Amino acid sequence: MQSDSRRNMRKQFFDEVERMYQVNKDPKDDVFYYHPNEDRIVLSHALFWSMTHALEKPFRHNKCFLLLRQYQGEMLTAYLTESDEYIELLRYCNILFNALPYQLGHDKREGKAVKASNRLIAIAVVASGYGGDMDEDLADELLDDMDFFFNKVCCRKIERMILHLNKLVEEELCRFS
Image 1: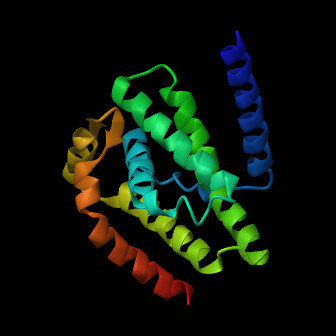
Image 2 (image 1 turned 90 degrees about the vertical axis):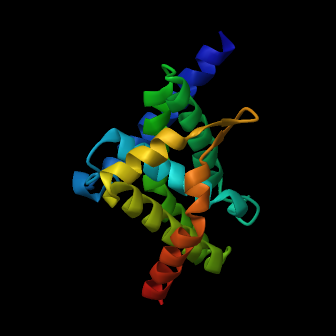
């Protein structure tokens, strides 16, 4: 019963966050609006999740980022196991991903990890853009490659792409300057 209570509380929280986010927002402002299908959204989350492993420590103060990473891991697990919780977790990930730039903007105004915040924003731009726009065959290959390794989600082909993705992040950072 306690897990049902926790699940309901979590659902109410995300319903409220989503309502707040949607006030005065055009649906086209959603990060994933132009993604052709749900699999591409999952791929964008997998890219972001893989690219941000090393950033957990600098952002331990940012609850939005930490929750996003936690739910992305759970969502990818649910995706691979075809769990009933997958759709709900994907929704939570999407809400948090859309809220992340606002939270990072707040962090920058507060003077918290400004350089790292810019990098995280660039990673989010690259992950969402690259995941949504890549070739269909490559997207399918990356999704098919996801699996478990020592009971943790592993994306080996994405991990091999990290150097290329980091170059794209550096290009995005140059645009911010």
